[in-house]
Length: 422
Image (cartoon, rainbow, N blue to C red):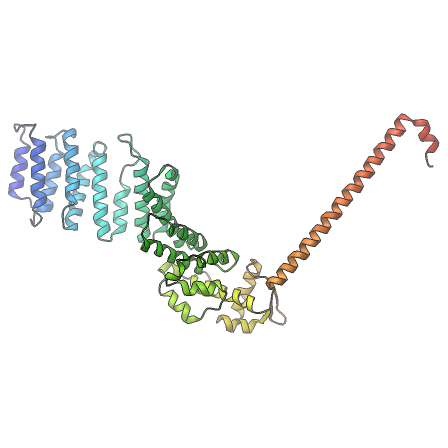
């Protein structure tokens, strides 16, 4: 219900006989009066009729624009978030049919609403409100920084709800204009969003690298850099075992800040190729996010698969050969699954060796064996290349000799006929 005083004041302002020049200032005073009455039960209704009045025919567009912008700023001072949301929603609804004339004010209202929804942790609603901002318009020029900032904010709001599909679509829009943006905060926001999407997509090697690069930014405070380093280590631990992960672990282990983070213990063991115990894995899993504990196609979690592959890689460096049953005991798996893991990693080249399925023994190649095999292959390759070069030279001499003989026969046919061997 509208307050009687507000209704009568608006009626006076809407009277065609009232002085036109004083109307904007009178509306501003009335707005201040409404907003200051935060305890009024009619606050939302009063704001609604106020917005309808300034968008009516009694004020022109030129006078209504600054008033609506002032109203959007005034809504931010309301202590009650529900009142802000109701007032902003009402204003947007009133603007729907006249959006082309009030695009700037519409954007202000939507940003205010997004702030309120974010404080209430209604991230999807905040993202949807921001999506309505007209960034590509013939009525006003929107700077590239503002476009990228809006898209990155929408992206991060969707990430709060783990909606990576929607988040990535807005990150891709920002990516097209990233080269035109010099604002360090926007660049950092883009890098963090990209890292979080890679993380959520379970592209852990790329996510680890992105987080690690992000952790060196001088714009961030020490706590945020440490948090980014922790995320980089977590993603490296969850990466598939192999040379690529070994390089990432080495890079993180050599970072002088690494001992300060809780994940350093498991990082050190993985870097030094030590077997991980179930207790250590359980403690580490307590710090993981839900998507990092999701099940893979074979029914195991991402962490369990990463740990199995790491322990298998460690076994390959500790033993020259191991029975399939003994390997299963070391990995905590049944024999068939242990053999499948070993075969998969051998096939992908992440460990070197062979499987004797008759005797059920797995043979691993150590570093020396791999180097010796590489040297032998290199020697064979060098020898083959030398033989091919020798053949080419012999062929060249034979062709040159045949060319000389043909020229002699052409220019000295009598000499050729006298000395021709029949």
